[in-house]
Image 1 (tube, one colour):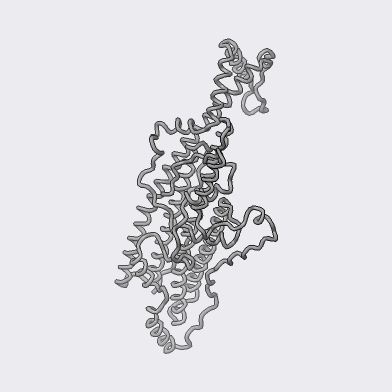
Image 2 (cartoon, helix red, strand yellow; image 1 turned 135 degrees about the vertical axis):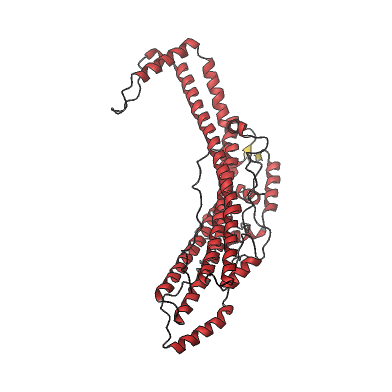
Amino acid sequence: MMVLRRLSPPLKSTPGRLAALSLALSTACWPALAQTAGALQAANPATPSSAPAPMTLPAAGATAAPERPADLARAREIWQRANERVAEFPRGHIDLLRWEASNPGEMVTPGPDAAAKAEPLDVAQALRLSLRQRPDLFTRAGMNALEAGAVQVAYAKHVRDLQRAWVDAVSARQSWRQMGEMWDATRTGSELGRRMVVAGNWSQARLMREQLTEASAWQASVNAQAAALAARERLAQLLGMWDATTVAQLGERLPASLPPVPSRATPGEDLSEATLEAAVLRADPLLAQQQIEAQRGLAALTPGRRQDWQTAVEAALAAMPAPGTRPTPPHIDNLSLLRDHTLERSIDAEARLLRAASERRSMARQAWANLQARHASALHAQGVVAQLQAALEQETLLRYNGMLQSSWELLASARERMQSLDAALQARRDYWRAQADWQALLAGADYAGPDTASNTGAGAAKAPAGH
């Protein structure tokens, strides 16, 4: 399970404890990604580093018009030979559907670098690796409450960023593989269309539509590869990796897919919807200090002095100009109140506390609502949309076998299923990102707001019907 149950920073107290912690972290690191140079070597331009591996782009489709048969006899000969060779297509249209039927689930053929590997890098391992580069996220003996609280908040933010980067890297890599399969399916349709033109059964315009579909899928595959590389680099930065070979090995150590979405969205252990806001308030260590300061300020004021301030505030608000005129802030001219520094500190502390508490409560409601929405979307995409698309593909295959639908409709159905799988993948990614945000909020970090929901799977236009 990728969810980290502990969002407290590690304790750094004594040299012996630090040595033991360093030893534990060192033994947890896998050798393939172990850094062989320190920060000084990484920052030195003279330090040799392996060249980054070039992007492996898919072959672009042909745009030249195929040669058409000179006469009817030649066209019949070409068509007969084409029919005999359909079964020889590498990953041809019917073979594609048979392969998917024998390999159910979300995963498609892995890329060439996804061979047998060691145990995948999970979030807990990634966090331990990243903390080796972040001594500022260790709490230390002798810290006061404010210092320890600041470290707690910074640590929760780091865990959130690390979790999100890991989720993005895994999902982007899986999406890249799926977009490669999408392009492979469109290439099959384009090749079939080219042979139809050679046999004299298709016009150039129909072939061009297939070629445009293939070109769109090619672009989607390249974009997915670029996104996967960018996500991997972001994760490598958080882990402190700088050598190109080490970063490439990081991609090979990522899991093949994200963890499954749980059947229910729960706020956490011993939490319910009625206690969410209280838990988020308690998690903020700085809010507790603000509350103590406000209580001290209020205790130093007499009820009459506070009432005088409230009266002055109401009078200033009543004297404000009507809306639509020149904006003028409210004004207080009672010098006796303004020169009372005890009153000033008390009022400011109370106002800051109210703003902070309101923000934290609002964050709790927003983050929990976003987590529920992303959870529902992920389950819907996985259990409804993907299942319907798979059933539709089977129905299309039956109609194809009964000669009621064309080869291109069959290929289009396969592409649509791949699109639905990619959309389900993006919905799952959104859920785990929302889960990371929620956990960080419960650990004291802020909530930046929901991401834009991902409901698109890069795909191609629908292919035209064939013969």
